[in-house]
Length: 134
Image (cartoon, rainbow, N blue to C red; front, side):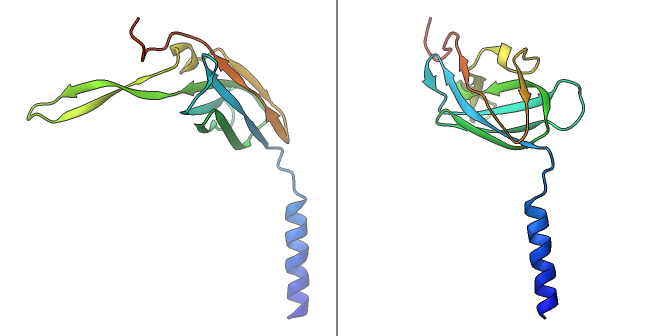
């Protein structure tokens, strides 16, 4: 049994030392100076190679693990209930809209270069607040 244990220890040590070149990306997101209470962030490879990576924004903070290095387009969204709609039969459904300007959605021009092992980036988004009547 002892030789098996040493092999297991050697495998664990070898794996801990492995570097797959991926990064953890973290930071903050504010909207008009306030932490974004809830939302999502997605990093999309500019060159179209590799997978997109994303995560939740909670209380203005986000952490995305296992992001491949390279230049990424940054997409951030934060949905809120903007109204109600009635269906036939009287059923009411919430109408959901994005709080943030459309320039932060698909087609975003915001860029981030991800480097291993960690990248930190804060995003300060400004724009009209659609929840407030203009």
